[in-house]
Amino acid sequence: MRITYACPACQATTTLDGIETRETLDCAACGAVLPISADAFAGRGTDQPARLTRCLVCPSLELFVRKDFPQRLGLAIVVLGLAASCVAWANRELVATFAILFGTALLDVTLFFLMPDCLSCYRCGARYNGAGATGKESGPSAGGREFGGFDLETHEKHRQLVARTKRLTSDPTHP
Ligand SMILES: [Zn+2]
Ligand SMILES: [Zn+2]
Image 1 (tube, rainbow, N blue to C red):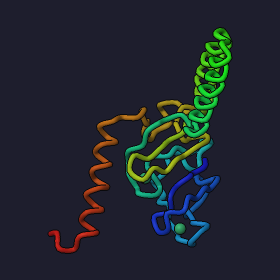
Image 2 (image 1 turned 30 degrees about the vertical axis):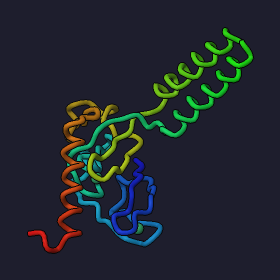
Image 3 (image 1 turned 60 degrees about the horizontal axis):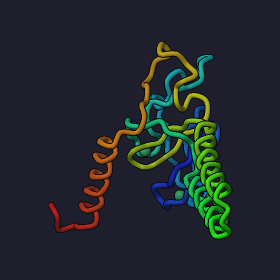
């Protein structure tokens, strides 16, 4: 399993592989070490792929499953498609205009479905990819938690929590 997270100490984005066999998360930029507690994975040391039970960074219990789709790539395809269709439109190529628009939309949708799932943390945004991250490869009897898709209410809860924590730590006069 691979993790991509923002280091809590220096905010640098760090990517580490094989986290189910690691004892710590080490930041390559500042050397900050985050210990991985033994209960963070279910099924560790069995023949099943180890399953993540909570975030290793913050450590929130609430994670959601999403597509590991680079949003910038999706946006770039749409922008390129729009630009190309404008050129075709200017040249009065009506069929080409709609073919390009339809084609780019289809490409976006296809890419989206081809991309694997990953787990993401509501609180700190850490991302987990690979076997055991989404829990789909092991049955419900494997133990541990099943994570669902994105939930706006949970997201909002964590967003407000983070904002409140920031306010409290930045304003020492506040009780
Ligand atoms: Zn760091
Ligand atoms: Zn987290």
